[in-house]
Image (tube, rainbow, N blue to C red):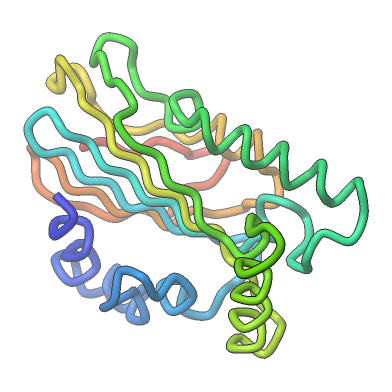
Length: 194
């Protein structure tokens, strides 16, 4: 399944692949995966194979938090905690139909802004230096087991746009039973089918 997600940018129509030409060759290179790190724009890849649904969301932190610097105040820390809570309960964000019976198997959130103190804080500092101190990204990965995958016709990201109004556009790429497609979604046009 991971291979399907990695292959997405190379499998789609050239216009989609070109728009995402900097998409990661290395799964762990989160920053490169966003290309130009364009504020207001996020990227979501999804692959449905058999009963397994995998979703990866990559976004500049400013889209989700309203800032990209390390938390300097109680308000900043509250915004980070609120964003984490939303991202740790993704069923609503992706509009998964109840009929599909998708149960969350795994959820991973990665961002320098989510790091704690000590060693992780040092890593955060190095990470920010690597990006000239200008960018912080959030990378979320979800794996679902769906008991009735045929009932999962697509994703509806309206709730994601509502939860994170700093996100204006999401470049979405999916692989499903009917092949692959890419679509630029906005709050008023937030659905994509498998």
